[in-house]
Length: 247
Ligand SMILES: Nc1ncnc2c1ncn2[C@@H]1O[C@H](COP(=O)(O)OP(=O)(O)OP(=O)(O)O)[C@@H](O)[C@H]1O
Image (cartoon, rainbow, N blue to C red; front, side, top):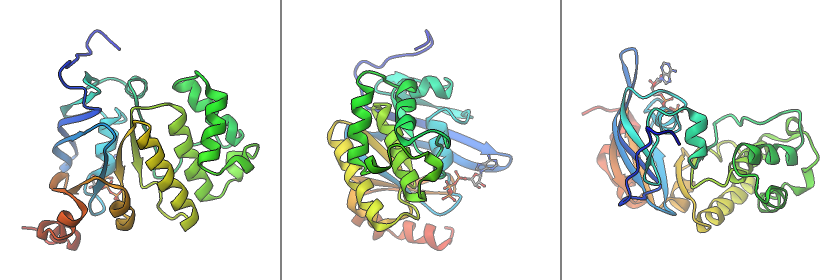
């Protein structure tokens, strides 16, 4: 961590986003978003296409530079730091399209993720992760030989190998077979129970209902509503956001 890093001893909240903002030309992709995610909480981020969900993830992980705002991980400010350094501070993410090493095996993909994160006990952890995600039978296959769903499992496995405190999942179950969806849901719960905090972008409302403790709804770059599944599904503003009507 650089000298510029600041600590907030009183607040070890795993993830705090304060006033995040990002515009592309005239489009306010993320517009003054504030969000705290508590330890072991699974928070869902939903909203129509183009509402700013992926941009929010890119800002939180340092993949995109912020126009304004601050990011805190476990009480340590990481605002403005490069993505690799923010990753080392304990945040890991998946992408809508898995980013794997195509030409090495499943097991080596997992081990490579540990090299980037925490190598301690990596070979055993890789075995445990493959068992949890039910991909042990393809351990020696190249990543490029996997089905789309297996690639999603492997990407989630790579996140687990980094031993993060906070995980950001970007539509991790989109387009996968029901069986793979079940494996991912169970794995998320198991990893959460081990002490990890999740922020998940999800279009699958059934998954949101099953797994999220709290849901934030984005529309046009802003958080419009926050609450439980029942609260947000009964909310008029949410219905307006999804139907595309503006106040
Ligand atoms: N690199 C970029 N350059 C220009 N505009 C961008 C860029 N990335 C995002 N945008 C715009 O910012 C807005 C928010 O996009 P973003 O991808 O964050 O939304 P999203 O909620 O993740 O959408 P989806 O559900 O379709 O993935 C959109 O208007 C989008 O066109």
